[in-house]
Each structure stands twice: as C-alpha cells, then as structure tokens.
Length: 500
Image 1 (tube, rainbow, N blue to C red):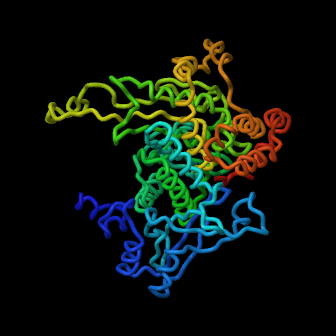
Image 2: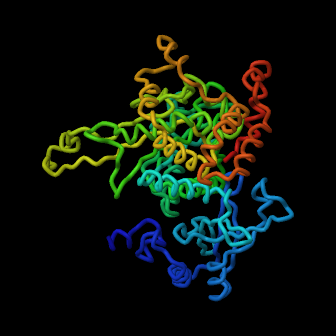
Image 3: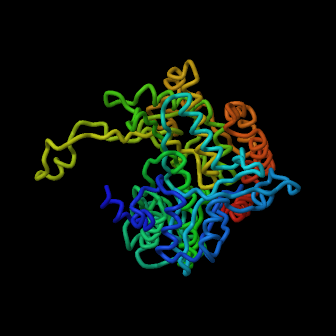
C-alpha cells in the first residue's frame, strides 16, 4: 500500500503517503512548507452549480494556520438567492480531504473544497454539500447500508470545422483519431482530473458529432469509478472546472448543456448507484439483481418525476428528454435497455473467466468474479445541481426501503423491450411520463416535497427556492412555442450554453 500511495498520480497523496480521507491540518501545512506553496485557493459551489474561488497568499506560517483553522467570511447573498443581504455573512471552511495541487496556477498553489457555516458556527442547512451529507447519513441510519455513486460526464467540444477525416454525422461513439479531433484534449483533461483527486474509469468520444455554421461539435464522455456518494459529488464539480479551464487554455469552447440543436444527441449526466454493507456490495444475490437493489429502484420510480427538479434545471433539459435520442421519457427500468429511465447495465455476474479465454496463457484457476453491479439513473443532464441531485437519489433510495410494496412497484415498472418502438406503444402509454418542462418539474417537487424534507435532509427554504426558480422560466407550453417559433430554441440554447 505504501508504494502505491507514493506513486499515486495525485501529487499530494504521493508526497504525504496517506489517503485523502486521512489528511489533517498538520498534513496540509507540511505539504505547503515542503513544496513552497505560495497560494491557497478555497473553492465552493454556489447556487449556479459552478465553483467559486477565494485566493489566499501564504505570507506566514501563522496566517496559513489561521485560514486552515477558521476559514473565512463570504457574502452568502451573492452566492445563494435564498439568503437575504441583511444577514448574508457565511463562513467557508476547507475540507482537508479534498486538497489538490492546482494544475493551472503558474504560482505554486493548492486548492480545497469548502463547507458553508452560519454565524453561529453551524453547517448551513441548505448548502449543497451539507444537504448531500444529511441525505447520506439518513440513508445509512435507516438501512444500515452505505450509498455509493459515480457520474458519466458528457460534454461537447467546439472548434472551427476540420475538412480532413470528417467523422460520420451522429456516429462518433468510441471513434479514434483522426476521425475524432479532441482525443488529446480529453486525455489531458483526464490526467488533470486524476491529479486533482478524481477517480476516473475511462474516457471516450460519444455519439454526438456534427458540423454547423463552420464549426465542429464533438461529444465526449469521462466516466468515474464508484465512490462514497459525497466524494462522487466533489469529484464531478472539480472535473467540470478542470475541463472548462483546460478548454479555455486550448482556445476551445466546451458545453455541458443538455441540448444544443434539434435532432442531435444531447448531453446527459447519468448517475450509477450502488449500496454496500461492511465493504461488500448488496446489489446482487446468486448472480441476479437482489431484492435490496430492487427496493432502491422502486424508490427511484416513486420519485422519478420530482427528481428532475434537481437534475434537469433549465428549459433546454426538456429538449433532450424526447424519444429516439437515447434519453428517457417514461418512468420504468430494465436490463441493459437504453430506452428506460433506470438501466441495469452488465455487472460481471457471469461465471466465465473471460480474460483466460481471450489470453490462453493466463491461469484459469486464478479467477474471482467481483460484484461490480450498479443501477443507472439516466434522466439527469449537465444542468444538474450535482449535490442536490445525488442527495435526491439517496432520499429516493431510502424511500424505496420505507415503502411496504416496494418489490411490487419494481415489478410493475419493469420493461424488457424498447418502449419507443411502435409495436410497444401500449406499454409506454401505461407508464408514468417524466415532466416536459421546468414548470411541470416544479409541480412534481411541490407534490413530493415532504419526501425530501423528511428528517431535515432538504431544508424547506431550499425546496421553496428550487420551485420558485423552475417556475420563473414559465415554460409550461415550451414545446408548442417551439413549433410556432423554432428560433426560440436557439435563444434558449445560447442563454443556457454554459449551465451547471
């Protein structure tokens, strides 16, 4: 283990020879002094979902210790719309486990994610990271299980069109250079995300690939490893910052927007979830999906429509949630089925030693099949408030465990066919449909708000604010408006191009 830590791609982990969860204030100070760090950056997520930054020069040992111990004041009313200017002061306090060497600073610098605290020194009940922490604790208390997650981060890279080796329209899935133009950018982004603490599974080019008005739009995806849910959220917000900052240095434009033009693949932010007990997965039993997993899925089914309030947060989100675009529209789940809302992907549940079959020199007896099974929520997109969305999923899973007929709900919502095929239209019409606008999403959240406010996970004022924001778009008739005025979509795409 020691050697693995010393050669870890995260330079802070390698130098301190400790896992991030073990970092203390003393460790941070040691790293700063050993590496002659001159700047400490506090970073924290605001209501717009983006990281904000506060820079501290390291002018003395005493000052360094002071900011690490006490944090600093910020104007909460400029960060969150639900905080009034008359009582807006908040504290931001660093979480040492999130420290990373800043990959973009010319001056040696470290960054850390922060938590928000009130003037009384208590966690801000409505802050994104604390909402997720409360959801996680509530889930474990109710079930005795730990909730884990990971994200599939999709985004488009835009540059001037390239005539050489043009990629086929909407057929960019797993394409290689030279038919994909931004593989070097993607791999460099992955390296930097890993150096800042992101646990990456892989990256690849995605389906979306088209040329419009002299520009090439190429869709890419970076997928993470399953982690404790709080860490999964931290990794994603840092990753989005890294991708944008790197794109700026390349002179490229990047968007996580859900939909940027009609008829082309939208960008989702799918979340895979897994439940653990005593360090072992409880997702399968005898090679099949367990009843425990199905109870969580039942909770996702019950809360699906209201979860869009956290995961689909602007009008362009609902241009993506349409049939035949590998995006869900109906509340259902299935195995390896990309037309459903919740997908159960391949989970290495077979008995064959595939590597020995592919490589005859491998020892066939040296084989143990791990339980990698997850279930994937496919409705969220790049506009999602990552902490709120994951908190909502945790609450939904807990709700499944608290529902007496959970297994019956799971059975009723299961589909084994492509529900968008005309021959299965009767199946689709029998299923509940996802909202078609922010306005409908707000109504669903209003109906289900008690579920999210239970045990104090989501603060009532936070729910009020989310509902108010969603309704402010007044998009209840958005699809008809687009039929009457197609240019309206271009205006909305431009407005929300850099969402999340």
